[in-house]
Image 1 (cartoon, rainbow, N blue to C red):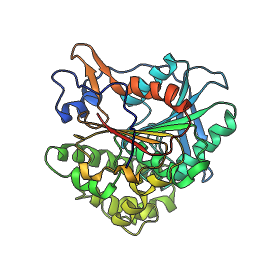
Image 2: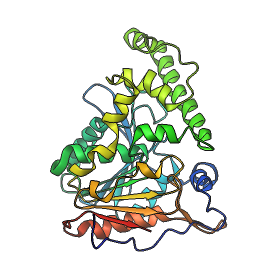
Image 3: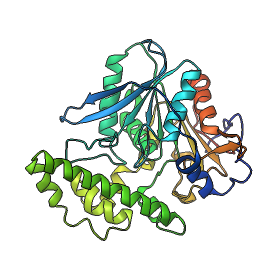
Image 4: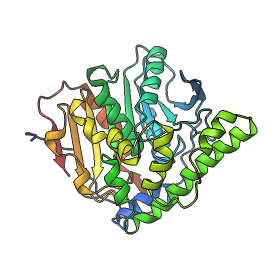
Amino acid sequence: MADAPVAAPEAFLPALGLGNPHLQTLWGPLWRPTVHLTRPRERLWLADGDFLDVDWYGPHTTDAPLVLVLHGLTGSSNSPYVAGLQRALAAQGWASVAINWRGCSGEPNLQVRSYHSGASDDLAEVIGLLRARRPSAPLYAVGYSLGGNVLLKYLGETGPHSQLQGAVAVSVPFRLDQCADRIGQGFSKVYQAHFMRAMLAYVRDKQARFQREGQKEGLAKLAGLGSLEKMRTFWDFDGRVTAPLHGFADARDYYRKSSSRYFLGDIRTRTLIIQALDDPFVFPHSLPTPNELAPGTTFERHARGGHVGFVDGTLRSPTYYLERRIPQWLAKDCAFSLPSPAAAVDR
């Protein structure tokens, strides 16, 4: 258990009228004004011949601190929480680069494989490319939801060799199997239906590209998945699509090998985890206990906030807790030496 826990500088208090976790979760995608940023896009070519598109923002100096931002499931670099964080980081003189996972930049990717919650190999390759590009810049990473799970898994896999100065993970689905169950309950079924439509469209878009370009091998592999009809749940999709495309035996095997909760104890990079206890995607019992956390990990559990929500201020003038807390923590707390115990605090 942690002693002398490190507290957040402020407890999150939702905007009046936005205390409900679903309103917190839906505010960003449905009602937040678009964050307009002019961002140069770069295509990074991967070792397997596929590509990832990334969007840069902030100072162009090669030694400015650089933050890699990782979006969630069916998101992109245009997700409001990504662009909002990039703007906040630039305000304190930091550069950032927002990744678009395979096929998420508006163009289907070239390989049959796609992105998924355990795709830490893609993250490792991007970090290597950024390190080679800006060797003198302190490098950090921030991941949301799926991106947070990928980030924590990567940190555990690499231990002291992550090449990151610090990391932040928000609204993490620590146990993918349990989250697949949670999103199939109550109002959360609405989110499940949305994700299923988007993920199936992702596969169909790739089929259309392969058809246009005459990629017979890719078409054959996708055809081997069978019908895409009658998929209603994450268990359906991950068992019939994610697992066979990425070398897992089935959905349960994928969930077990990709859930970040099993990697937390091996993290050796200073890390902040921000989670809401009312997250409609995550059971409270899916959250790790303090004795599962590695030294140097701070786990801030807030009573409210929904899933990648954390909207405070007022309805007329909403503000975004994460866009204050994350830059502040990166700029201040990451400069401290690692403590011996893991830190956990309820807010």
